[in-house]
Length: 422
Image (cartoon, rainbow, N blue to C red; front, top):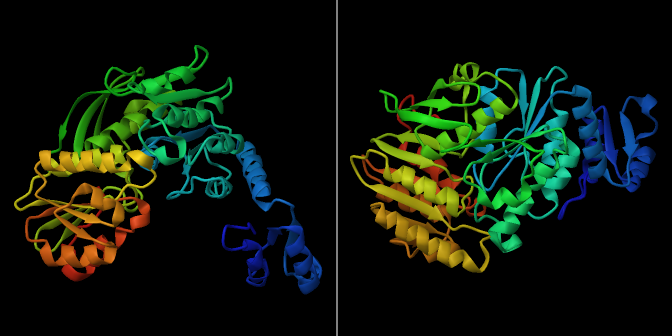
């Protein structure tokens, strides 16, 4: 029972016991109240465990269970793509892998993800979020990673940290969390990380000019996937991925590099690409009746991921128009308006026919059409989308743009047998 900003979780401990929970872990005040109400454990109502800091106790339990399992643990962080890298890594590694679900990547979510790992897990893959200095350090103290992967460094959380160098320092806490025993996976072109590397750190780089790189790539004949020959220090392998986005190919390189850091065979990883499934709202392709295609990538947004998504939209074959339904990008600080203006200019340079802005921050796009919220965006899109159009839906999490795709599915209907993630 953890006390949050608005709700004290300990209030629900009695309900948990009544519903048959084995036990509850709460602060001393709640423990005393529960003991008075439920009596001793011989009544069969479950154990009442008391802690002055239930959150710290949860984290200690997770660290103890991680040590009990004793298998290698991969920690993944980065400005963008960490969830997708986690999803791809989980699929490609030829072992019994337990990965954090969805976005269980905080000081509460990650311990819960660790505690749900089966005893026979062979590799743990944990996503690690960062809101400020010290958070990833805390997550590493819980998870004790053996491999630390940084997907990229970009202008995310500038409002909190101020500079790219400060963002790099916060992400680099995962490298310090390795101690002397681990291996690092980093982008070849991430110069901002250079001050945080040292000679005793075993490092694998990915991307052009790196240890893991794309030798050649192209779309599969059906147009719904991508073939890539990937070079690694352990040899080459031919992969057939169930996606076409260039940024997901970069995410896949990071995942393959993680496998290489674990001394796994790239050829074995290449045999497992059909297992790749992305978490919801990240790169979903939703084909609606009437030949309308939605690129539903609305889980979150920042300048780096927004640029990649717009470039992917521009590369889509379309009988009709390419339309961008964009929410604002949060936590960019004083430079926020400039980032929005630059991305709007990119969209027009790429030939995006119409830009619909959603929410106050999206006014900085100077969009062709502006609406106040996701509900209005759904109504506008349902009225304006035509056969052959391709529409990108993307914005910061607070805008709630998943409502747009969900409402369009209801109003326009999905094409039979379609709508799977890409």
